[in-house]
Image (cartoon, rainbow, N blue to C red; front, side, top):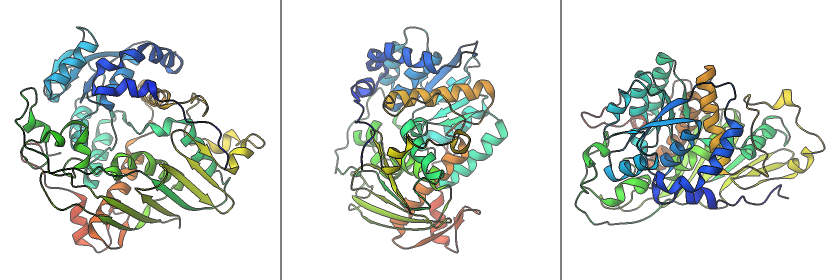
Length: 440
């Protein structure tokens, strides 16, 4: 296989998000300004007003990008230290809120950016939509399959724009790979291999005093109430099933989403195997090793593994394509210059301003993705990572995690969104929610 490009240096984006606060992103302000100037719709006369809810890590990156497309006028986080740093990053302009409900009451806000831990995504998104706000919410969209079905109803009821931050859909490499598969350049698709990377291991951790800056009770939201562990909070919440789904939903909602975009079908059979850590309320509880096999209605088979080269391999009857964030490779890529894809045949989504593979990096793709969100607000269009597509992809990830727990073959009825004659597995499609924090 030959490669069309080398890995794009990521120094800027790593520097941008390091430390988890908006203040560290200011070094990239000039670069962002240049990128957004090329992506912002020239016909958009008014600047949108944004509010940010959840300001650590990816939430900080998203809000800095949003500030180039409009004005950040409000910030919210249950950690006062994070909230104060975010406010300082934008000077005295934004109002600061501890509770997101108070931010949503601000009638001047046009759209909110949700960068909270996963177990808060749907509750806040639904409340924001009902408050008349457009929503950009980080992936994974949901904590359970039931949440996706609920949010589908809210989006339909409100008619507002909801974009999920699965920005790989706005990256030219992933898009080209999917378009070539869908155009039949590797023949009939037979197999897709997805590699996500290992879950983190750790613990038992020490109980600590709750920091005075953190509203720990509110942070836990719908999840079961637990004694405070520093490792349950902020970035490492990903390795606790109470709040997330480990790599299956964290990286899976990027790579599985791209795989499913190409497969253009839904899974009907799922089987997984995993090695689990010993139960301990003070230790990470995601699988130590995992491997999931899916079979789709189209006959395509997909595997999702934690070991190997991070990325997606598409194999067809006449060739294969590998793609990740730095590479797109395969014989069809070499042939593309000789026989380009007819534009009328390969358009997955009318999105004409994507950077070429040799020029695009993570930050460029995030700008593309957020620009699509702004465009869809102004023109009342369906975004590239809309509710329905992301509910399907996230559901596929949830089904993988359920299969890992059940340790047997599961059969999924995609039309009914439930398992075939499997009451025990159906119970895992939703979770009990703590009183006062129900998603409804």
